[in-house]
Amino acid sequence: MNALDAAGLNREAVERLRGAFSGLVERGRLPGAQWLIHRRGTVGCFDSVGRLDPVQGEPMRSDAIFRIYSMTKPIVSVALMLLAEQGRVLLRDPVSRYLPEFTHVRVGVERDGQLELKVPNRPMTVHDLLRHTAGLTYEFLAPSVVRLRYTEAKLFARNRNGAALSVAIAELPLMHEPGSVWDYSRATDVLGHLVEVIVGQNLGEHLRGAIFEPLGMVDTGFTVPESKHARIAEPFAINPDTGEPVLTFDARVPAALENGGGGLLSTTADYARFLRMLLGGGTLDGQRLLGRKTVEFMTADHLGPLPRSGDVLPRGHGFGLGFAVKTALGEHTEPGSIGSYGWSGAAGTAFFVDPQEALFAMIMVQAPGQFDEVRELFRQLVYAAIDD
Image 1 (cartoon, one colour):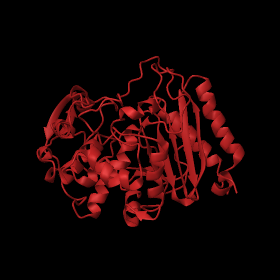
Image 2: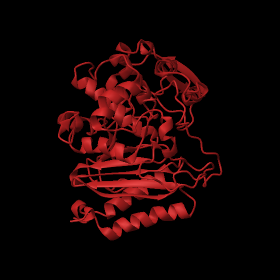
Image 3: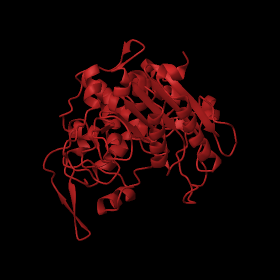
């Protein structure tokens, strides 16, 4: 039996998927793309189109290294939950127990374009950081007085470490009362430093020992060593839709900041091992990394009726501990199963895991600005390929 049949995937539909992404490359909308579909314990499809680097012209290679941006968040969330399983942290703990700079944070209340500061009704917790209800935000979301403060603070700078970034975020007003609203945010940046404080190590060093080495993720980290520079996937210099320069961080230069919210680089093969562990209920190749009930807890909806800010989280979805979770069918244009979960990265990388279908799939590209289209097209074509 071939891999497609073993995975229950339709050959013609898989060829249509390849044709769709080949078309995006031929039309100059993507430099290249790589994807993997894993179902019923089998890699049914692992394929690439286009170029690794649009300047050099080298074809996309199977061991290409991609900036995964916010696909870092699920990994850091797992790192925190491993510490919870060891009894070293409780999700109900106030963040200030570990990061005292958050002891005196204030909520920014906007009135007539002015900002009033008030004491929050309750402290933000570790749970809030994991599910993006800490009251924090991101500067690139809809304009507001608080988000302007974020922009002015230059939180994107990579020349300060996690401790300095945590202090800078704590000095800014909160966008919301903790626990009151889901708002996509720099919460996982803070969570990464909180992990550093608990373990007494830099985040990259801890992730390597706690997750990457146990899972055999040999090409994942915050910097690419010189011996692997030729494998780094690169975007177009200019966004083909807007004509604006495409900005990404330099993967070749070590930075002071090991950003838990978006700093990792990885390969398709490496990230597939992480997803195999999740789909396997915390185990990979017979070895347990995370408890089965912990995985179930992380991939359940933790929002319930809480309001959502903006449109980052699609309708019909809640949010768990590091993942968007599908809670209803037919409320959004993306297909899937109730209980499927996943996330994406700003340069176009995306994954989803569907336990009902014994499936996970991921797409890896370097095309900032187009990730919504890429993610939805990929997901639509993967579900169309399920044969039985």
